[in-house]
Image 1 (cartoon, one colour):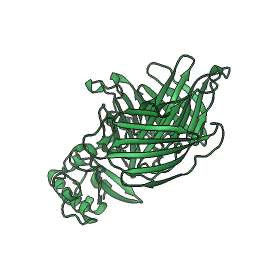
Image 2: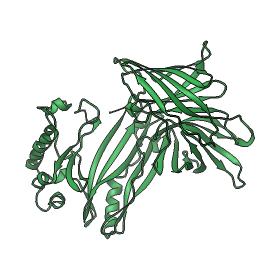
Image 3: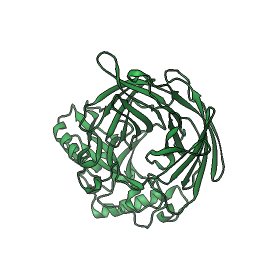
Image 4: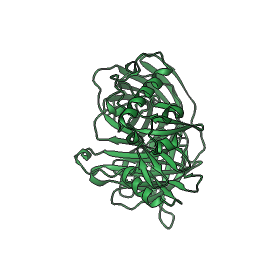
Length: 464
């Protein structure tokens, strides 16, 4: 399960983090870098001094500049807090992201307090802070114990990142510091925004045919996958919190030795109250491409949900894929799916399919195995899991029982690791059979996998 920190957790420890953000007065058009961050940590209390970029401009006519200030702090290794503030005369909003839990960025409304600072509380998190000269000093209190190493806020390093929010989608395409973004909302035309990101701060604008600014999105990146911003038009000015929600990178276009190409296709939908964002493969330059793409559309494209589970206002399902290995006439796909239906947790799962490039079918390797082969595979998986540890049983590794659940439904991919093929057995956080986050993946060597697939199966051909 993915810990989203949507509510207060029962039990556990109280975590207190003291954050000091140096607010560097820099125009968003400047090239001022993000200052380095140093941190000293204690068992339950961490003191952090951080350099953070700030964009601060006075409001002027025709949307030339925003009327708010943004500052951002983030960790470099994704194992601690990321913090951002939005302020005009006073701090009006605080956005926090617990990088260690892979949670959603949470927006907390802020109010002035009697000490000249502000208080913000929501989602089981409390933030107390004060802007003193050029520094924001804040304390975060949250249930759960964790320590972290501080780093610096930085923009996405990928060519394309998909940010999503309630009824909002931003396709972020970056080249150096220049950004082109496509903004979509339900039942509205796509809007094209262009601008820059400097350090962690960005300013993106939409212009009419005469070059006048008619809308803008200004904000700061909390991490490579999350941001907070303000959307401004002549009619509205509203805060926005963005999260990549698991679809971070588009897979690269792959050209196979036989000339066939595999390219990512994306479909975005808001049917039934759920945001559905599916990135799936499309095959071309192949004789069997019609049949194969039809099978991919049925099995690897994430179809929109329209049931009662889409009641929460921030429900979503997102999916992308990875080519884990390929041969002369086959390709192994792993599809990763993340979902959220409200509450404290989201869910994540993986599934594998092997494309037969000869007849255009998608094959499940697990379904090719008879019962006696599944029993043999369970012995191989157990030995693989225990081989490099001192554990005597898989329960010592975090499994809730000694049953490894090797059956016809178990996800199995072919994994190419530096030219060596493995049969990879995948377990998921949401299966309820593993006590700790991040269950292991068992890799069975090709020589061992060779003997478990019956003759004539695709698995036998792959591991021959």
